[in-house]
Amino acid sequence: MMSVLPISRRAFLKGMGATTAATILPRFAWAKEPTFGQDFLWGVATSAPESESRANRGRSNWDVFIDNIGGSADGTNNVRNTEFDSRYLDEFKLLQASGVKAFRFSFAWSRVQPESPGAPNMRGLDHYDRMIDAMLEHGLEPVPTLFHWDIPLWAGDFLDRDISRRMGDYAEIMARLVGDRAKTWLLFNEPGIIPIFGYGQGIFAPGYRSRRYLGAALHHVNLAHGRALTAVRANTSSGTRVSSAFNIMPFEAPSGSAEDVAAARFMDVLWNEAVPAPAYGRGYPSLVLPLVEPYIQNGDMEAIAVKPDFFGLNFYSRSFVKADPDSPVGIALVEPPAELERTDELPYDPDTYTKVLLKAHKDYDAPDIIATEFGFPVAEEAPKDGWVNDPLRIKYMQGYIRAAHDAYQQGVKLKGMFYWSSTDNWEWVLGLRKHFGLIHIDQPSLKRIPKRSLEYYAKCIRLNGPA
Ligand code: FCB
Image (tube, rainbow, N blue to C red):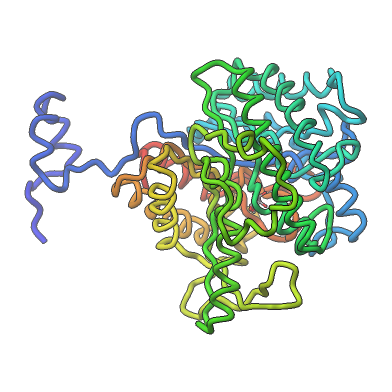
């Protein structure tokens, strides 16, 4: 097709004064900038339990769980991890050179209060103090997650409603320590998953398999969420924005049978709505209410209804299920439809990403949204000449960044995206076998080696949109 102007757009703009360009450009359809808004937060995400070693902290629920089951799918555990706690500078340097603007990480509660409640451990506080200063020195805005599922053993678990008080105290300690430097906070990582996987299906710490426990844990997660949000807000300045990283994953029943569709619908509501809906003041969805009703006390729903300042949204893919009466949550996984392309582990599903962002926009009254995680495990070649080649990850990233941009152009107030994960790390279920990172971790030296996908991400950041 012939272009409107016989010269490149860049040359055309260069030849004009900025004002002239600004006045003329909107008249051409092709001149619509393919960018996100100014101050778009281009980030990478990680977490303490998946990257920090076990050194200098107390024992956590996940240490116990992983040791008891003999490691993740590949037999690895989190003893050493990527030793992010002592090697973070190597990572920050690579990220800074790529223009990454923000770094999402989590505090290990067991480093801050290792053995008991009360006064925090100064060594643990110094550690995070230094790490946050280092982020800022490398041009990375710190985006802490207060709680990425690891609980010090002394603090118990979510069957105990008192955990919300302990969580509130811990939130206050951290807000006082870094509230002057961290302006965007995530309280919980994927709060809805904790009761389902940890207390219902028994595949995450603490490994309970009970529908009754699922209900108790869900309500106490919500109480802790409300308390932590109140504590962070009370101990930080007014410009601070606080939310959680909600995992949104639509559930579908490919068989179409009434029984399977009902099971998928229940799971969809439990997974996607049972935490954000009460936090946004809507109460529990009716399908979930019978599970939590026995645990609700006077004043609880008010304590829970503390509206986040933005909607943190983790998205990977859709899930496909059928009814399973033997499962405490009533479902079993089935194979995704064959026509859906797959990453190494998950369906690759950019269209659903756009839909999920549009739905959150509609359901939660057009909030600011930050895509707090998106990421892809792919098989890739061994490093060569100081780089890892991972064209498949680049393809998937491009699809999701375009999908997010599509939602943005349709009115979603998307304020940032965080790629999971900064480096290859130890994953809860997959262990070290599956690689998500933009930076490769050489074993056993733990040297950081950039991947071509980091270079691609740098390009998106420079363009402030999908490259
Ligand atoms: C997300 C989790 C994160 C990591 C990625 C692969 O659901 O939040 O900790 O496990 O999946």
